[in-house]
Structures are given as structure tokens and as C-alpha cells.
Image (tube, rainbow, N blue to C red; front, side, top):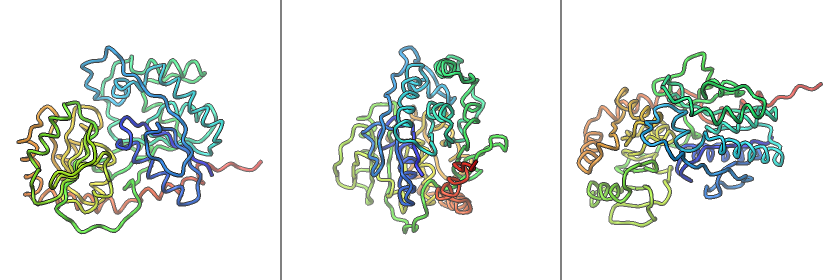
Length: 368
């Protein structure tokens, strides 16, 4: 069995796409399944064949886009231009020719589904509920993808939701409360994106993992130091442009160590879907520093809707709002108790290991 994983990664070793792909490859390799990954070499994938993926160029005249729709966010980051989609499609077809996978797993890489369809290979598409909101987006966002679809004799699409319907399986994660899907979306649901691990004793450790931030990185660092430096607990910080070093109780990390989430008292993050899922998995109250883009905003609002966390929009972030929201998160037991309710619901779902059971089903080839 051979599996090619194609994640969308903007920030190497930080994005949800990277962490999900890492969990998948670790899981498959442990079960003697040969893996390949299509990703930039800056990502730390071990024991897999690595195939290159093109780097996007953001459109020049797209300032002011609110990115409340999935398609507009991809377009704003350069992932839906005709040049990028065609380059990605060519790179993935080349990887398929060389690796000969039995299954392709796409994590928000539309060209990987195109390549799977044109090569008649089963494809799984990872999805999140924010993709399914009926948010308006300019029609130009789909022009590049549709141009490449047309050139490859495929049907053009109105949106990515309809296109992802063509995948062999759509995989969502998290409980119904935070990841609502309609039955017609036909999404296979799992709970945790990681295999089960021993629940660590809760400590007063705090994790601050932020890779997506449109403000000034130095200002963000100064806010964190003003709020947490000298506190009587360890704070592990991974933010843009940082080098690994220690400053009193602050432990700066070039890349986030996700194993530290288990047993933490709280996690502060940017709405990253993987950190969001892991906080729920381990029953950790969370605070999200969000913008108004489709996924970060969706996760931020979920913390308030079910009262297992808090959020701040980037434009409202200051040392005072950062610290006061953190103190409220810690001082009110409601957040911890509600997080345990969601954690229990997560435990009632199958975790990422359930995907092993679908491999033989979706790659079965009847004998003629």
C-alpha cells in the first residue's frame, strides 16, 4: 500500500496542514504503509519520500479582502491562481508517475484532487466546517482553477465545496458541537487528529503558538513579555521570526512543540485547526487571537458559543487585553468545566486511527 499526502502549508512546521500530514505519515509508517509527501523541503517529514510543491505568489491587487470564504482565503494567498494550480497539478502528476500511489490524501490542495481524478486514483479530502459556510466570494477566485479544469477536460465548478464532493471520501474532525456538517455533505467524522495518549496531570504551563499574525511580530513579542515575563509558571512561545532561547520563565521555540499541549493549563493560539482540535482532545481551555478569515474566525466564535475558551480579534490585541482575557480564562472554572464536556464528546468518537479501516475499503480493486 502506498499513500501520497498533499498538505497545504503556508508556514513550514506550523500550519494545521503540516501537523495533520505529520500525524498521518507517522500513523501509516507505524503500520508498514509506504508514504510520500508533496511539500516544501523546509518541513520536517521523516521516513517518507518527499516530492516538491510550488510556492504561491499572492495576487498584487487583492488588498482589503476579508477572506470570510474559503475560496477567497485561498485566492488571497495565491493558491487559486491559474499559474499556481497548473504548476501544482504538474508537480503532483509527476509525483504520481514516480511514486505510483494507491491513495492520495489532500489537505486543501485542489490540484491533488484534480490529479487523482485524471489518474483514476482514490482521493480523500480533509475538510473543516468553516469551508461549508455560505459566504460570498468574488467569482474571480475560481477563475484560475476553472481554467486548469477546462484545459484538462474536467467540469468547471461554482465553488470548492462542489469540487470536493468528487473526492472518494471527505474527512472532518471534532465533535458535532464545534464541527457541524449537514448529512448531504457526506463527511466522515473522526474526533482527535492524534492517537490516544495518557492524559498528563494538569500543570500551570501555558503554550502560546501563533504563526498566522498580520501585525508586527516585535510588537507581539513585547506584549507577551509584558504580560507573562516573570510569572511563576513556564510559558512556551512560538511566534513569527523567533529563535529558540530562554528568557526567565519564557521558553521561545522556533517551531511549536505540540506535545506540550497535553497537561497545559491553557493554550493561546491563532485559530489553527490542529491546536484547536488538540486543546479539545486534552481538555485544555484555549484563547484564540483571530482575524476575520473563514477558519480562524469560525474557531474563535466556537469558543464563545460553547464557553470553553475566549477570543480576541487582532485589531483589539494589546498587552492589557491579552493578559485580562488570559486571567479570566484561568479564574473562571466555567471554561475548564465546559472544556471537559467537549473532551468527553471527543472521546466518544473514533480518532485518527479509524482511517486505517478505510484504506482497504477505498482502495479495493475487484479482480476481473
